[in-house]
Amino acid sequence: MNICIKNLHSLLLLTSLFACKSTREKEQENLQNDMHSFFKANMMDSTSTLDSFRLVKIDTINQRMLFFEQSSVLGNQLDNLIGLYKLSNEELSNSVDKMRLYRMINSRDLIEIEKNDFDKKREKGQQIRKEIDTLMSITKAIDSSLKNADTTKAIGFQAKCFYQLRRKDKSVERDTAFILLNLNKDIVKRSDFLKLPYNVDFSKFQ
Image (cartoon, rainbow, N blue to C red; front, side, top):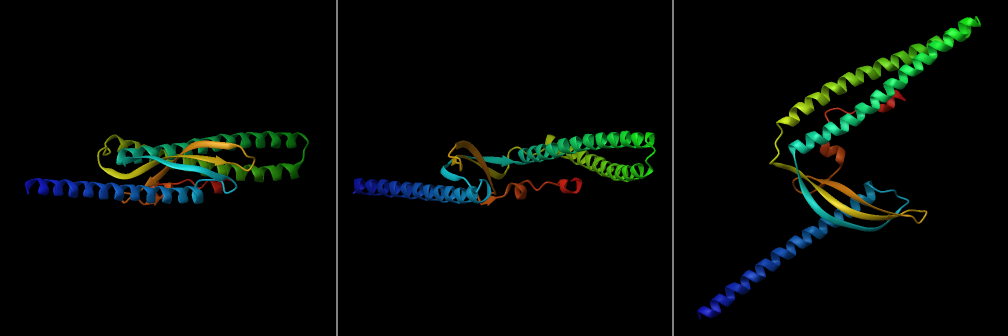
């Protein structure tokens, strides 16, 4: 009788473990399918063909990692702004040289036209300078928060996936894609997850 009960317990345990494993496998399969669809819709060139896509692993994301990524993204924007500011100063310098030339040939009309352009370029440079100051202040605050940010509590997940694309010219691209998930392991767009405190509108400097 005792042997039968022990066998029954073992059978129930094996059945339970198998059911749990099957559930985990099913969840993993559903998540990979969702990521596959998300990648095709949002992260790849529509002219390419996706040969393969595989979920490799899922890592946790904590508050410190989020602050670090925010700082990195805003730092790249700051670098681009500084590049635009330098270019703006070069354009102002060129404009001054042109006005000197037009004075030498006594062309008042050309001087007036160039002066108007100079004023527009100077205003644009002032706007870029203001944007640089704003961004520097925000990144400084994030860097300060980063020092004491929580490193233990998960706020989301990052899935690492390998993929292979076949381009229109038949060339093959193999690379890694990173897809962000919330705590429920629902896929979220990177911009929605990062929630940047500020985002530069570069279109106004075109």
